[in-house]
Length: 415
Ligand SMILES: *Cc1c(COP(=O)(O)O)cnc(C)c1O
Image (cartoon, rainbow, N blue to C red; front, side, top):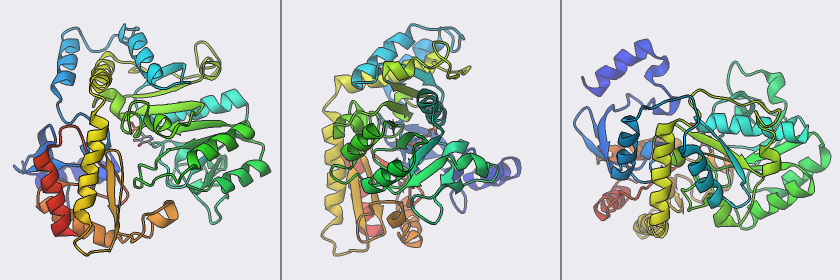
């Protein structure tokens, strides 16, 4: 069956025809038959250069042989036990070893679950009620973080989704990114705040990059006001390097949430942090958290294979950075100045806004109609970019020189 027919069947059975909203590409999404390396093949017979990479997890590309080997070996032994496995202390040691100051970790099944638990933990640890998040920051699809800003920058949030209680999200405050003064002002006026949760690089509207010193500033401000700093590194963890954004920018948060890459392409999440905080998690402490699939052996073995591979190939980070530099270079010089190219490591995006956006307000100024026309032309050329102006593109170690040429050629022809 072709994509168009599959989608019309799915729409009758599933809300919007999809399992997650971003996939509902108009007029209909392509359905994937299989994928390998940097390429995805559709049921309609097209093979595309994939720059979406499942929205971040596939740093090593599709169907990486070593991850596959680890998964297949585990499959032979069963795939869920409901008991501890030797993978857990092994992986816990690996990840905490890569993140100085993160002494203990809890494995969960998704990034959303990780941020939900980290927020609960921050409240449990501090005994305070409110959290601060950054406008345009995405931390998964649970109530406390499905909030958009009110009219003023430091106002209480209003729900971003039907079904989320307004009373609940009054405990979530929003601040603009790249604005340490706004944080200082908010924390000076309010004493009921448990934590700031932030994507160190805004990955779900961009990438939007931190200004020089911003992350260090918010570390100092949160420390001075005695609130916890939670880095949501579900995208940036192992994406920006071993140790993620906290290593790259030299900032040590109190808690870190991880997901995506650490599952090697299988479902996972994790939160980690200082021992005195993490010890409050059940069963060693009073902050409850539990899950049937937590720490499941398939996700863990796939994750361990991924992280071990990265440890063995540390040069890939510089190589990936060089690849996005090449894409950027191919964009300059053809005389067009309708947008800005932003990149960090293997994350990149062309914004249809002349100056690179610094925060959510500026991202919203992008010409989304121009983006959609561009995106469709790229797809017709066989390049699958993330289908929204507000989603980051990702390169993987599987993207070859030839793939890069195709991407660069696409940008030159389609903008
Ligand atoms: C994807 C993402 C999440 C949610 O992770 P899921 O596994 O989709 O639940 C949370 N935070 C950030 C920064 C993300 O990019």
